[in-house]
Length: 254
Image 1: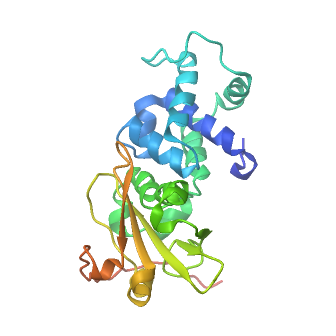
Image 2 (image 1 turned 90 degrees about the horizontal axis):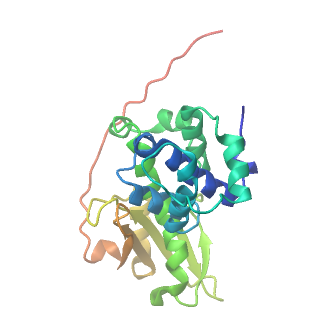
């Protein structure tokens, strides 16, 4: 059976994530690379543009249908749309179900394995969780809180993550030439290491007081954030690190 993630609604993706965590329990956490249910709720919830509690609620709804140690919401019948999802996906093989959940966040294991650096490949399943924390989940967290932040009040938001311009978001006013650049990073714990690519470092150096580093911390428990204006000349100290990567390919004449 082949499922096209693009034809699955976002609500169904959230429901399926809850069903997956209910069905496979702690083993499912391990397959996805999460260290706890709280971390899975936070990361998957934000990555799918929702609240972490929604993932937990969907898991609780499915708990009475699976042989885990939780009772879940056993005092009320499961809702029709959840039951429909359950019937359609209940027989999906574990590896296919895991791949489906990962695909919701744009993760292709085959492509990823070709471009990851060696030390990232060595992380195994945790690489998926790490990529979400440092990428999509942190970016979606920023989008969810941006309208409430005084530093960015009155600015319109443009997602530039796929444009290769050295920052993730462009904040503009009526004057398009007067914009702010936001680079978002995510951390599993309250403290940790972050890195800038050469393009990001160049953008930060060139834009100075119009460049913000937005760091989302503590996805493993309760996400919060810290904002750094002009990070190269502020409280963050970056050290240059060079690395040589050997890429192997196989050629043939036909």
